[in-house]
Image (tube, rainbow over all chains, first blue to last red; front, side, top):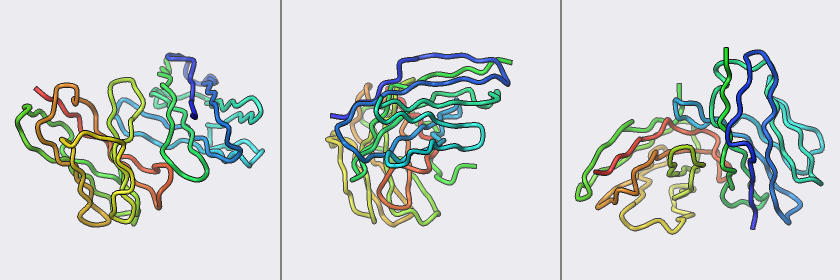
Length: 114
Length: 112
């Protein structure tokens, strides 16, 4: 069975600095998708970034980028120039290429301090 | 502004009440989802509708009854809930069945 592990329950970062959230996963599949979702206190889950396992190039969305290490089964999220609005729970998620439900990690609660 | 609209935002009900949660999207998405989320925990998938047909039921108790009257609307009918059902209920949609792309703000449900 696939599992997703986020080993940092809580993190904090100063505004304008860079922070990296870690995520590891376990799967025997070769093709799959990985995602980072953000859930601010307003409750709405927002899809931040996605990565297809067959792509070697790391996905980037503005200040958000990932470090995808397929062999190590690692998928970390880097947030550059942190802003107060980045304060949120961040969930890493996995899905098989053939479909099925998202497998979420337990989440990392990120606080950006002024 | 959220593109998936959920009503009500808050709901308090007794264990004998019947209520419904509503979810609406007008993006032409053909897959819609219900999730249950406890505080500081990841969302748990409950149901998936694909092209208005129930495609996934994650062994949810029958006191939760989903309904998809049309491609834009998803309901969750609640009856005889238990205190442990108190949670945030999130609706989501995607163009086709796949990872949810857009989530609503959720309904905070409290069972007395």
